[in-house]
Length: 504
Ligand code: NAP
Image 1 (cartoon, rainbow, N blue to C red):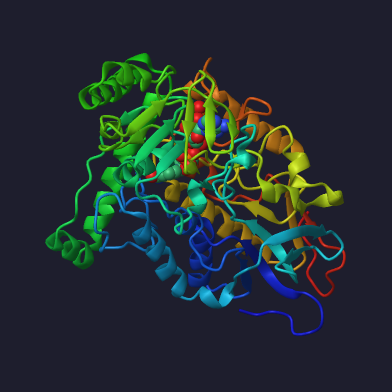
Image 2: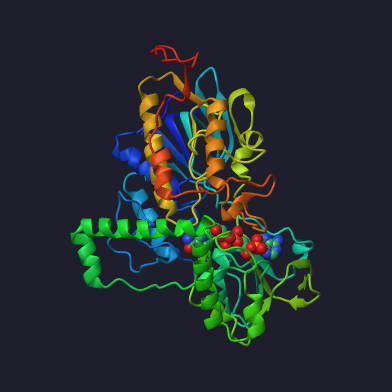
């Protein structure tokens, strides 16, 4: 790692923002490829991103462990088919320990990032310090800023209130009246755990979820040692898991027969597990399968059979002191309220702090929805790459596969820029628009844009499907996994003396 020694900003080739799966993945691959001049800015005091922050009871991954991990760092020791949060967090920390810790500045939240056209570099302020880098990588994610619900009077709640991604481990729960707002991927893991400890649990369901069985099991010692001795066995397992998941995409592509089969499985699961017919009906989703992330749980529905668990199947009208008033007029007095209400996934807070060519904020460029060529390069933001930004979410397969595809692409960008210390790349607006038009063709007819589908994958400001990649994961890699400089505008930073001229 090298930084400037003179007065002024710490200077690097590359500045990476975030040390979650994306940042750690890129940093590790850069390190292995021999890159040394990079710094990683992390606002928290540890690595891990969403797997550091989401410590709620029951937190786990609903994608198989051997697929939800880097292909370049397989882990024979996963204890279960689906890993709990502490194991994934440890995996990321162990990965970072293999050479990245010296590159990371903890407690360094990016407050400003400005493109300096003359110098051909990004000037970044983080944690009160200044950094300069030719390339800025936003690896800060879409599921990193918790979204509190906009409920009138929520600030007046007199009990303990917190978000699922900022769990208050000091809060008393045992025997108390606990409410959980939301029935998404986080809530279905939290609710069974709260049912175990709360004196009374109230679940505030605005829209019911499709929940299918989750068949988890521990790996045996024999299996783990086989994985250790024979990495090719893990490779084969990863292939099987990947292609089995790929087949699930067609469920989302509005092919009626497959949608019917998937929703029938979820309905059968609910009917088999929920005893009370009224509750069973209230838990039934009223939208097409696949619109929201399909969930997996064996202990979510049974929680509603317990006498001390109440389902409030309506929105919340207001909160006054300890009392939550539901839209249907019922009231619930609570000691603790957990908002499992998701994240600022479509209007990213960091986009307000990044200013590209001409001082234009990324939030302004994305006012009509996030977009970027190859999901990585937004027009007007030279030498900026985004990871886990627009159109990178998957409802059907492992997010790590997408991250690794972007890592490959970005390593291509870095190698290209390394050929000439003055080189600058930006994508032409028309090329970006054409990329988006092609993507929008893929989106046509999918469940996410069907009538009545309300999902965080769609930007509520404009109705555009900006969070999700609307196709197979392998097509993402084919289309966005290899950097090709030809569609880019390549120029030379005027202020970089002693460097070779750029090529265009
Ligand atoms: P989410 O999927 O956005 O769910 C938020 C929940 O809160 C929804 O049920 C939503 O209701 C409800 N809600 C939001 N605002 C509300 C309001 N004002 N009043 C009442 N209800 C409100 O958030 P999440 O569960 O945290 O999951 C986010 C993403 O994280 C997932 O989609 C997934 O990508 C990831 N995740 C993954 C795993 C995993 O195992 N891999 C686990 C957890 C999370 P509506 O449905 O009506 O909008």
